[in-house]
Length: 143
Image 1 (tube, rainbow, N blue to C red):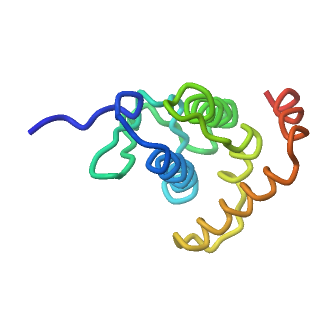
Image 2: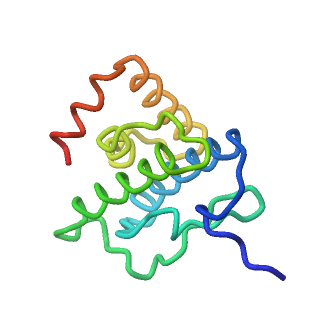
């Protein structure tokens, strides 16, 4: 067989790219709440695209979510994800800000089923859209 392409090499149309963004946001949250991990090097180079699914790789260097630098690493993971999907992808998307994605990941709103998580992500995206350009100012302070 052939290896799955890294996300930055996958030729995704805009719809699939948007789905990949959602999957990446959900995976980041799942790693945090279900596995108690922060990847620490999450980017388009450590995400594969296989059978219409994002697969997170290089998890071995992850840290537990209570590690002294976990907040810093998670903030960078969120920034990397948004940089790729919002700027460098073939079809740049209107992504959450880094702070909004970070808040989505760490917010313990439970329950943790996929429908509830999708609803929480949709609420975050709706709130982002409603805030307009003011949302970017928060990132300058957060980063």
